[in-house]
Length: 305
Image 1 (cartoon, rainbow, N blue to C red):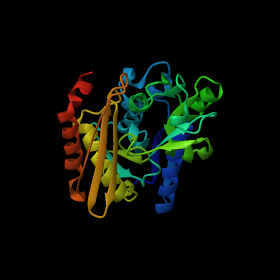
Image 2: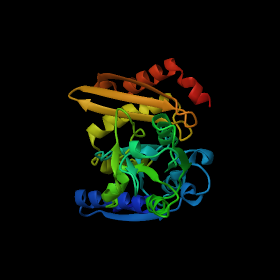
Image 3: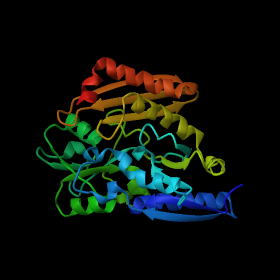
């Protein structure tokens, strides 16, 4: 029996609320008689701002409270940025839908410089991502990369206050909040790779709520899912977590998927890269193949670190 109301567990940040409201709107449009409510929550990742995500246990700290709400029957689904979803979900949960991907590039944001190449030596660049830190150090070993936590508004405020000369954020997040004007330039493949699943919105549900999953699955975008599946398979094969700087970018051309991947060292800026193509029916195998190519090059040393 289908529920009369769906409750969406979401973080309280402006971007998380935008994403949850967006999903709520899609559900109301798809099912006019269905009630849809938001259940805003604060996660440990939101509460602790003076420590790195890696030290808190990875990006999964943004999910646990939302997953508990679903297990306890306080919510039927949760909405996430897919890049924040661990490569391996707990057995109780499934990604019932992945929405069409937005702009997956990272954004170079600065009040004084138009691009990464324009930064002077010694410039201060802020990011909370080890993946971004590794690529920044690889491309610009002469700049100072500093930690930057907080939601989008907080990070922009710190930039505007002069704490940084530039920061790196996700284009999709800025665009969804109507802050496109803050993007000075886009950091794009192949020189720069996004996080696996970046710019895709994921809808998570409990396997136990079998009546809910088909309602959500109707929102799934097959083209996005197949490309992010390859990226997440690569991440999973490398034991991907917030403590491992991994980038991945998969594109589709007809019946072919092409995946580029990297793993880096956020301290030295050393980056290993690999890529190959396979049929669209082999997304997981493609991800595993690129992971193996990285391991052959010595990625194990990064994983051990």
